[in-house]
Amino acid sequence: MPIKGFIFDLDGVLTDTAEYHYRAWKRLADELDIPFTRADNEALRGISRRESLLLLLKGRAYPEETLRKLMERKNGYYLGYIREMTPQDMLPGARELLIEIRNAGLKTALGSASKNAREVIERLGIAELFDAVADGYSVTRQKPAPDLFLHAATLLGLSPTECVVVEDATAGVEAALTGGFYVIGIGPQERVGKAHVILPDLSKVRLDQLLARLPVSV
Ligand code: B16
Ligand code: MG
Image (cartoon, rainbow, N blue to C red; front, side, top):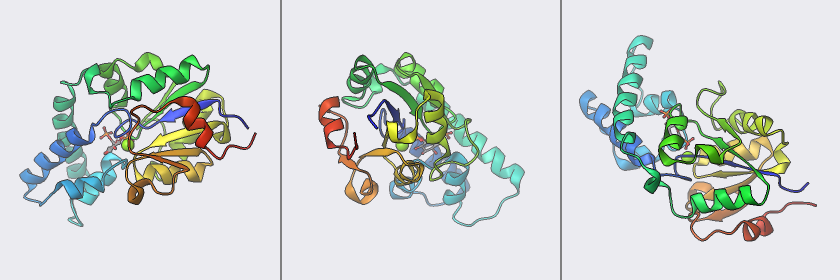
């Protein structure tokens, strides 16, 4: 089946909000006196807010109400950081590829675990470049479950085998493969090695070359 649509992850693919997530989690961890490094933050890539908090707490138990307040506090810090985002914060080549895909008549969706995804794409000035948005509010089971990408494909009216998912996280690549999508992994082999195509980033990436590298049966 030919490719008819692309589903883009947000953080780590279109923009680098991982840095802001890191600063917000680090601030919370410092306040709680819990050690938290950039390496620890790497493990949170593509993981939901709640799962991220549980990883940060490293087994420390808190009542549900406290967990909710800690997530709220972290998100407040994060929102403060992303308020400074502008269209300049797109990662190299990402906007150009999105535009090229749309000009070719293919559909585009966002498939991000973030509950702040809509605000981020507004700030980046790319909200109009998506036919559909699937975000942290769209499904209950987060990556590595395939639900978010399956939801995005449904919104586009396409089947998984007609879609390419572009992801930077191990959990996201796994989610897309489980869902039966073609996957482009952005980042190092050890992180996205299971994807069909692996790229360091989206700079200078051309749509026709990308499609030619996918194992699509026509
Ligand atoms: P929020 P993505 C993910 O975005 C981030 O990679 C991950 O670090 C974050 O915890 C998650 O969104 C939830 O974000 O706290 O804003 O709801 O990579 O799926 O675009
Ligand atoms: Mg990501």
